[in-house]
Image 1: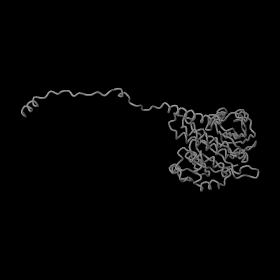
Image 2: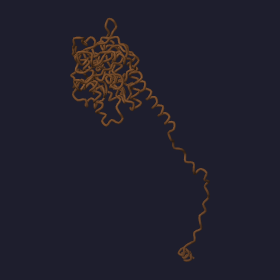
Image 3: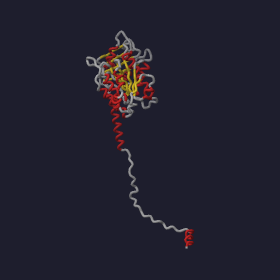
Image 4: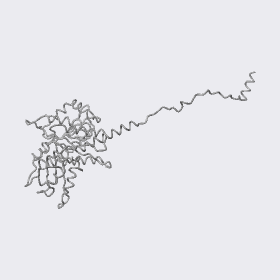
Length: 365
């Protein structure tokens, strides 16, 4: 029932490295990081890493990914030889290293197919979307990366982390750490929970099916502080679909799988009908029991097109504003205020000789 040994995490770029480090150091997963920046790699400490030679960052230009991978064939060979069945490709959408490389690596990993044409690997991108107040370039990088991922045939479940930090946050680094640790906890619980119950079990094949289905995937985990306290179902669903760590779901009823691990021996914590009413009628509903907390996972959702489109629209609006400002930029003109002034002949004023000068003249006579 535990999928940990079947998983490998690969982090691209700055964010990808930090998130993969969380999975390696806190939960014992196999993982690697790759970056062109030697400084970023050093900051990650003693975890497996690969430096992309000749590219100390992409300078915000994700189009350099093709050239970078071409000049680092050893890295491509390493990725292509990953033996684990489930590969999580983690990157920051606003950056350039991960957002440029992950679509290419995804296509490469999906080349190996079964006899029925399905991919042998389960390739799951994890993209941290930029917050609304970040730069135009970060928004366009994320938009283009999501668009490319959306078009890849056979891609498995994609996780969209909503990196929407408050402008008033006093410690954004702490907020980033919270996002990283929360996502790692949610996904680890989904992958490794070995709970069982008399009514039903959420087994390995069902988890694999959820990961294999394309589209977006979200997870929420919630418990109660007191033994007799009732789970706040409305809050769990709110965090699952709107206000949690993932980008808001589309709410269009597109949904393939729902999984529930109940915190107890029955369905008293949350019922599947309330989840279906929120996300749509799925093809499958999987349930398990006796979890420490209540876990709800949904896969096969539509990509969060509305949220990602808002990033693209914000980038476009900011660009147009910049162009308008450029048109009204001030320029230095010519100084013409002296052109109409006609030069005049200046007549030297007759100076009255001093008495000494008069005396000198007289003495010369």
